[in-house]
Length: 343
Image 1 (tube, rainbow, N blue to C red):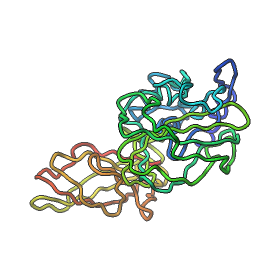
Image 2: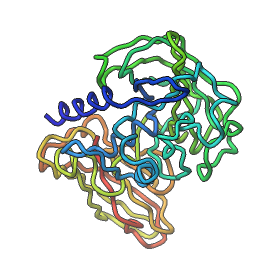
Image 3: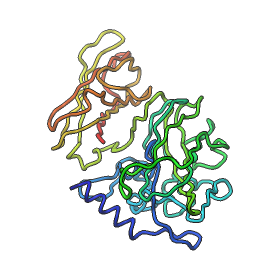
């Protein structure tokens, strides 16, 4: 029922909301899903049981503070009806993530806490782009230069001049008019990248001048598409009931210069939980050296651990556990509260 209610709400938005640019009305049609754009991930971050959108992620909340909640419902509508595939010299500097559309100016905010997709430089990846309304066309992916900083709005000079990946009319799957509809393709990320970057996507329709723009925040840290920052901090999407989780930490063994700990991931919701992510900051003098029964995402602090295939599913009121080994200068406790989220 929750899914039907959400789809009905989005369908209503699609049928009633238009964006007028250059004197031409245009309907909303799609956004990058893998790696997810700010628009798509902030919509997921803000989902609640009653169909309202209440952002939890601080960057998503800041965007809603600038542009209101309507762009969260219309996450698939960052477009220019007069775009005709134009980029540099057409979309103004500082407005790339909104496609120069002032309705979505919140997506342009510089912030260090946008939801992140963790990836590996040079690796092959399964890309997908939502096709709420299907249209043929081309997709172009750019990446930020090493000199880019998340502390400022994105400009064209922050991007590598040429796209690192281009796709010509990829195949469409799923039911159009839903989140499941998507264009999919395989393609490699650029080599030699590390740390936080933005992947900037441009979708140019071949049957009209309409062009879509979007920013996907990624971290090149050896990840395989894991997502962090959705439902953090605070309760996870779903209002803290279906699919909600909590995490507790206890030291199980300690010695001079190090320790082992166990983290229990509990399903505090009323339905089965499929997938979980736990994060916590390390205390000064701590370095995590290994994780078992979980998959670590990235390095350093905060520590972020996702489920393995065999402990992905947790029954209502049930729990899964994973272990951690770390070097320590004496303080074996976490440096702050643990956060737990579930898709």
